[in-house]
Image (tube, rainbow, N blue to C red; front, side, top):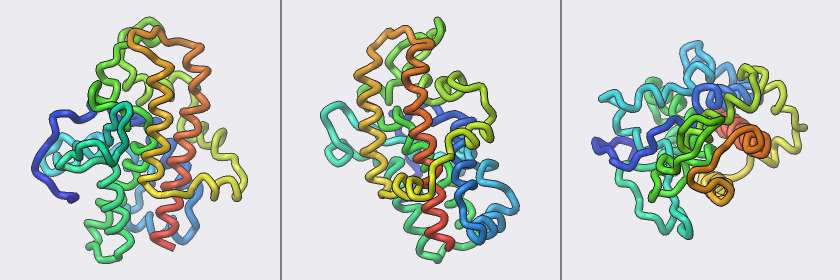
Amino acid sequence: MLVSICLSSCCSTAFGWGMKGHDIVAAIAANNLKPGVAKKLNRILDGHTLMYYSSWMDFIRKDEPYQYTATWHYANIDAGETYESMPKNPTGDVLTALNEIISKLRSGTLSDSMQTLYVKFLIHLVGDIHCPMHTGHLSDLGANKISVTWFGKPTNLHAVWDDMLVESAKKWSYTEWVDNIDILDRKRKQQLATGTPADWLTETHAVCEKIYEDTPEDSELSYQYMFDNYPVVEQQLLRAGLRLADILNSIYK
């Protein structure tokens, strides 16, 4: 259900990808919209861009009218478990939310105001489902409890993957990120844009488990870790942007 009055006490406390990462995802999507679809979305979003709303869900999730969305940003999967085998959060998760949002948008039955709201949700949550630690273990709250240092400063593994890698790997604006990573030919883009939210969750969790394997508690992370993992960040941001564009193109074609 998309509307719930309950909140989970086990929610992830950090914001998937940070503002820049979500801007990159939205900008890649905008770069790959069909012209007619871009015009429709401009109207739906009252003249604003996808980037304008890319981090909106992070800003409003503690506000009273939107507290029901607090658990939609992630889906915890413990080691040795699958999404199907994990206890389900009664307030929903990123997969149940995305499936419901996409279904409602495809139905064409939403009021104008609800359509605008659901598009805002979609822009953000497609980014979150590709953020590795948003599929992390429930036992450590998506790696929020795994202490590491980042260039000598104490932090946690979740925070490193939410925004520190994006901010540190390249000192680019989000538009420069797009110019440098949204460079595949049409056929390769189509191949990357395939799948369902359930497929993407499984794929992202595989990335997540590799991160756990490579980053034990109290790891001291700096340049080598950044260089080794930048390609993973690039891969996940590009996948998210192309898949968001594909969903929007299919809904508003």
